[in-house]
Image 1 (cartoon, rainbow, N blue to C red):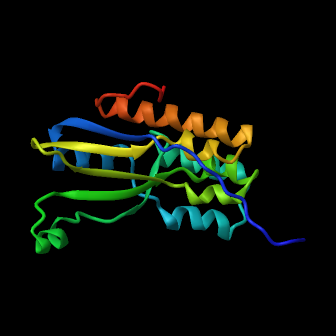
Image 2 (cartoon, helix red, strand yellow):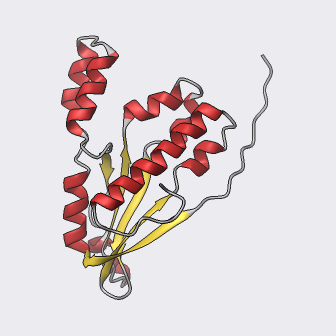
Length: 174
C-alpha cells in the first residue's frame, strides 16, 4: 500500500438567513427544536451492544426534527466584548449519527463535515441570523453517489427544520 493523498475540491454555499426575531428568542426556539445529544442514553446502547435498530429508535425519539446538538460554544459575547465586539453569537455542531452512518459506511472521512456547523448570531439590524453551509456541497465532493444522496437528504432535513422554525428556506435546499 503506497503513500499519497487525494485532493477534493468543492464550492461551498454558505446560507446566511435573516430571522425576524431577537437573537435570544430564536436561540431558544432552535435549541428546543434541536435538543442536546444525550451521551448517557446513547452510551448505554453501546454498553449493552444494542442492535442498530435500537439506536435508530432512540434517535427518532430524541431528535424530533432529525438533528441533535453535539456541541455548543455558548454565547461568545462575553469574550468578544473584551475586544470591543458587540455581537451575540453561538456556534453549534448539529447532526444525527444515524444519518452520518449512512455515509460513514462508504468513507469514514465524511466525518470531516459531520456533524454540521451552524451559527446563530445577531444581525446588524437587531434580528438574529442563522448561518450554515449547504450540506450536499462538501458531501458531494467525495465522488460517491450514495454519500452525495445523503447530503441531499440533509439539505431537505435542514429545509424542514428551517420551515419548522418559521424562517426563510433558501432555494436549492428542498
